[in-house]
Length: 290
Image (cartoon, rainbow, N blue to C red; front, side, top):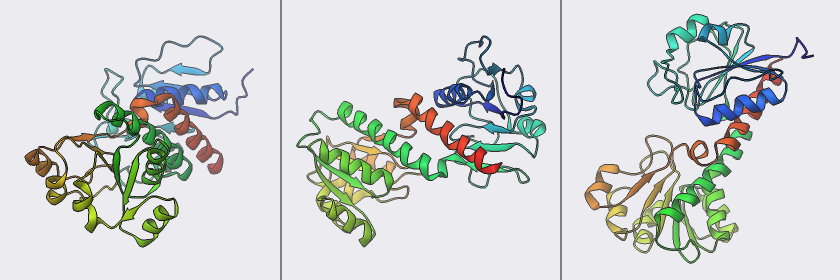
């Protein structure tokens, strides 16, 4: 028999990542109530995962509610691409207890005051694991979009944060000639220590002239017209940075440069793994909040 003291978790909206997160948490014998995800079949006993018939039912007695990444695209509705229902934040707040921990992605400061919140996208463990999934998705796009093998291709990686580090290392291991572009001397030094040539952004227009692939991980404008003009015509830019991104899209269009916007890659290429990463981060936060 299930322990009555086991926390109850509500999962509201989201894509296939939250489908997997709900299942992963239910497998740990938590009571999980799902709303706004139509693709989950009606569970059969003794499963601890339940489909709620309303948002009110989902949130009732919930110790934690998990929202998507990002939790909303317009600040008015919860992101729910797998549901025919419209989930408004106004209705969500109307049924949300101040005692319920709200776990969501890319919260910023936009959630109403008076609630305990956990932005799982800012969790260090989540960020590291999610970066690996992002890199694998980026590699898949590069293989699909380039007529060349990654081996012996000349690849530029702009930015040397978590994703930039993993991406540069992975490309190098696949035989690509990788160059890192970074702002700080610390990042430039780390790249060189890994045997990867690294230069400041001032060198980017010159280096772009011979690039076969460009990966951007910097979320502010760094790839402007001089770089776009220098790129070979068939060289794609794979944009991995969060909005607003780092590429001047208008200039890219005018210069005939193909920019592949690749946001949310873990959810598109490895949703099962991405969902388990979310589940692990949220469960850790629930334990810490007790």
